[in-house]
Each structure stands twice: as C-alpha cells, then as structure tokens.
Image 1 (cartoon, rainbow, N blue to C red):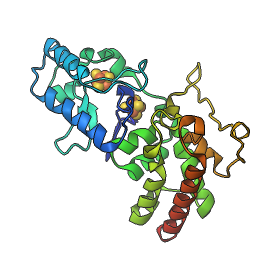
Image 2 (cartoon, protein in one colour):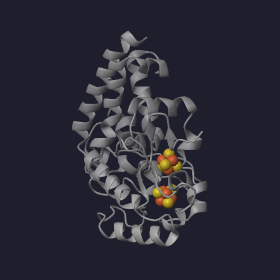
Image 3 (cartoon, rainbow, N blue to C red):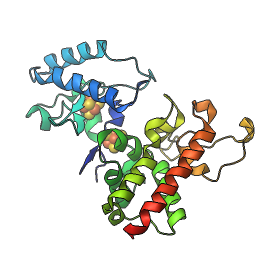
Image 4 (tube, rainbow, N blue to C red):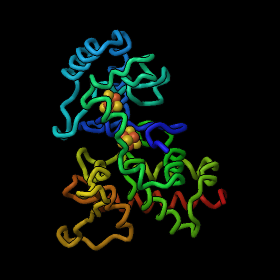
Length: 262
Ligand code: SF4
Ligand code: SF4
C-alpha cells in the first residue's frame, strides 16, 4: 500500500516539503498555497510548467539542506487545502504528465517509495494516519518508523495493552496520542528528529540513532527510545530535560485517556 496518499492524510516529505527553516504549519500552508495558486493558471505544457516552477523557486525560502531538493510542483490537491500532493501528476493536470518539470523526472517520481513503505506494517501506517490526520504531522511521523514505534511502545508500556486502531475511535485517546506524536512539530530547525527517517544505511537499512548521555553529562533517560528519535540531544538544538518532561507528560495523558477506550 502507498503511504503517500491515505484516507485523511497525505505526505510530501520526499518532494522537499520540510526542507526549510520554518516548519510551522502556517508557514508550510502559505508556501503550498502560493504554489497551488500560481500553478492553477499555468497552461498544461512542459514549457509553461517549467517556467512557472523556475519563477516560484526564485521566491521560495532557502532550503535548510542545499543538497536535498525542494520541488515547486508540490501543492494542495483540494480546495479545502487538506491534502498535499503533486500538481504535475496526470491525475491533477487532467492528462499531461508534467513531472519532468520538477526537480526530478517523471520516472523517478513515479517509482520512488521511501523506506516507510517497506518498514511500516499496514496497521502501523493506519495508526499514523488516524492519529495525525493531516498533511503536516502525518508526513513527519510516517517517514520516521522508529519514532512511531517508540511512541506506540511507550503508550503500551504505560497501559499494558498494545495500541490498536479501534482505540483511536475514542476521541480523547486519539487527541492524546496526536499530542504525543506532535513532539515532531516542536523541534528545533534542522534537528536530528526531523530528518532521521532519511538516515538509511548503504543498503537502505535503518541506522540506529543514539543520544550520547556521557558526552553531555546526563543520566540515560527511561524514555531514551522516543527521545533518541526526536533528536533530544543538545547538539540537535533541543533541550533534553524539557523534552523528557514533555514525553512523560504526554505518555501520562495517553494512559489516562486510554482506559475508557479499551
Ligand atoms: S516520503 Fe514516503 S510517504 Fe512521503 S510522499 Fe515520499 S514516498 Fe510517499
Ligand atoms: S514533480 Fe515529483 S518531486 Fe515534484 S511534486 Fe511531483 S512527485 Fe514531487
């Protein structure tokens, strides 16, 4: 199953959505709106789309990581601005495949599947979509398999029960789990926790991340797995103690809200 477009959520991470300093939802929304509006009036031809993409790129914020491409053809797929996706895809243009006008080419765009497609189970992917439910948080979570697993394991450790999709039918629990996952939205720009999902090994395997507690003179945290995933290391610009307290608070809230959901 594709992880990119699912019921209630969508992702644009590999098109460069998060490669910028200001990752806040309003800033991303404004940028996606700018591109969507600009491209709406552009003739569906390669020449016109290429020229429009170049114009849009001139006014876009500098990328955080210059080596990672940011495609101007990523925008909103719906009028309500709930779903992010490729505006050059034939399903959006009405027939023409204009993905060659982006930062890759159509064959790369059509065939690329990030590691989450292989690493996440269907159940985990469904939990990510149901708990996040939008383009902003879903993309950050679905591309970070270790984080999602660590968060779910943290809740299970508190409640003694594995989190199942049906538990999210209970709105207070769904909200509490969303708040836990939303740690990903609150990290310092460029921190490990934002882009860890792309730290794959030479053969595409997961590469473990770790917080070097000894080097920063701290005791190992009982929430090490989650903290490692969010890059709660001062060298990532994040405050370890503050994030540890937040993790504990948000896990407690999940556990409190979980009981009625059983
Ligand atoms: S990062 Fe993965 S889930 Fe997101 S759009 Fe790309 S391939 Fe799809
Ligand atoms: S052209 Fe390719 S990189 Fe650009 S938005 Fe579409 S799928 Fe993403």
